[in-house]
Image 1: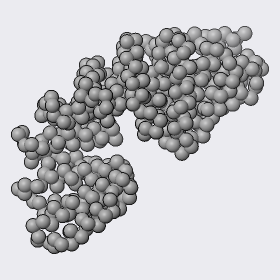
Image 2: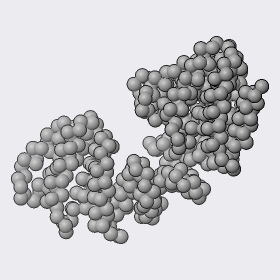
Image 3: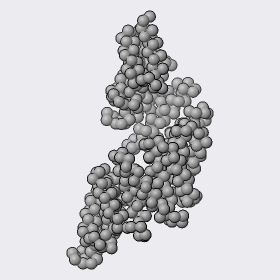
Image 4: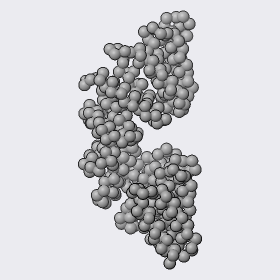
Length: 443
């Protein structure tokens, strides 16, 4: 790769300003540097690639036959830098360059589908960053237009089917329109037919279809969708053997679907398999891995579920230690810290219920207090924290009879009730809990 870069530099030196081959030589060096950046990740390579593409673009003014190519190449390098460094202005400029290239590739142009696809992907990326639905809607329409140009037999048709499916899946997640999810699933099925056994992207498509079917199960509860999701994840995992870079994703996804099926059918073999898959995924997420805290949390939750079914004390002890390890990886400021605080608190309260060690309940209460601080007014889980604290304080009052625990528990239940107005699904339970606490305080 370094030799390629140096050869391109030498070639550029042979074409001074004004030479007709200089723009192409600038472009070649820029692409070599971008390729090296993709291999080695040196920021200086992508920075230089961008500047060289800018220089080539200046030598290809409006009307030049290669101008759309230079616009596209500069946009691609800017997107690569955005992916590494997260500078949103790079992404904004990338989108405007792709728009300009698309205008120069009108209907009938041989590269129009590429520009449609590139602009759609960049808009999807910006939606992911900023959440502006108009970017996502435009991305979907552009993918539809690209698909019309990539008819059956076109080499890039499965890629476009997949991209359109993913964008529709994202819109379903935002707006909940069932037809978006149904279409997403059908597009993934169509892409899978074009990626038969032996195709390098088959495991990726199996995974995408499986995830979409699980999403539909979560929203509609049709068990056949979940069963299909599990079988597809099994097929993807077989194509991602030990050493495959995405094996941990397949392990995690299959475990999650098995956990869902256990929740709905209660078959313990699903839960046992889920735990073993999560253990295998954890081995692929060693200390320092970005996915380690999530995997620790998933394994802890599945082992906690098994404890609830079988009551084996060692499962609960391991669950607690795993939640502690996950919490250490989610310091102040981490988006999932409140979840880890809550999960550890619940597990400690369960152990107190089983063994009666006061320190477990005391620690559980302090963890729930810390979680509540991270769930300010407006947070969707704030009422859950109020209820958890009230339950733990009432349990401590029942054990040791300290009136302040009961009084504080009542106040937390009042706060939870305010978040459950008439018509709320949890209002009747909140009213019941508060009435019981007030009765207990009266007595």
